[in-house]
Image (cartoon, rainbow over all chains, first blue to last red; front, side, top):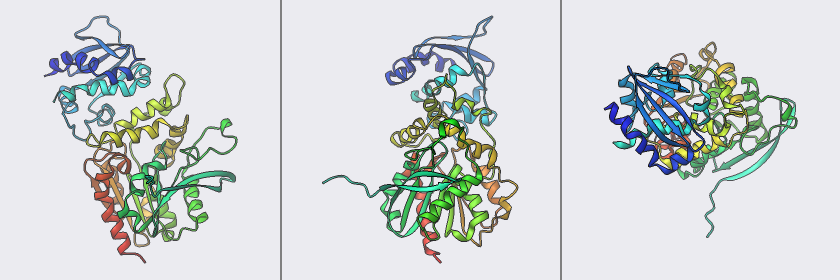
Length: 123
Length: 284
């Protein structure tokens, strides 16, 4: 399931014109960890340019969002349960960690949150 | 015919903390005064659905003021040279001054989030002054979900955008798009540092764990209602608080987050109308 989510991410984001517009000032590469598997998501001006699967050697990223696979599965449910409906609900509940340089995240928070939640629309 | 709502807005001059303030408030309806307190970093527009609900305004005179620094209430003169900080004492004084100045007789007070928290202090200090108290998303304490409120007010992060984006997660996924984005718009419109200043009360000064046990609900009924999707003030926070207050009535609301009255008014009225009916039936 997880590779499918990340394979679909560029189309889900880039095909959503209002979302791309909201993210037009966002250019960064961030790390998403699903359990042991790492993914690098490269965003350029609100569009997902590239999604790569790790492991990575000597690769830079701005911020990271890390959670077990089960937590991401709950997060991507069409109607997520309380505690799994937002990345910060998951960090407060101990189900996820947000780390690294948080400025690019906070400066584009609405866009990044909706990017991460975009796979919900597949259901 | 003009599509006029029953809501009327006015400005009120009051002295708060020894300084003159010009406070904006709106009201609709007739009957028992129902004073509504908005959440941190937002304003009284959160209650527009309640004020447009004939099932409420038939029996209640619903009033909501914008706290100074919020909505259409200006900060006091000289604000540019100070950092805004909401304190427990200042907040209680603001509410009691509003009620006294408008000569509202034994109102019901309904507050959400910071408004829900201050209701606990009103219950402790001024119970005889109220017909009933209603706290939405209310607790004596809630664990923080971010360490650094500095993100809310710094030049390299747009304050309105980040306040709205942070709050988006506190809205239940079932809430309709229109009212979800209405709710976020109010956060996006807040003045620089105002949400952060409110959170000083919510996160630090308003730790009431040592005092909610003094609340006597036989002097004033206390209702606490919390949304299941609120991870800021969780259902567990509210239930733990209520355990210390004999007689407090708790309801956990399904498919609702931190902003019941504005994020999903249709769902909220299922929970609040029975409470308002019960209060009316017990009028003394």
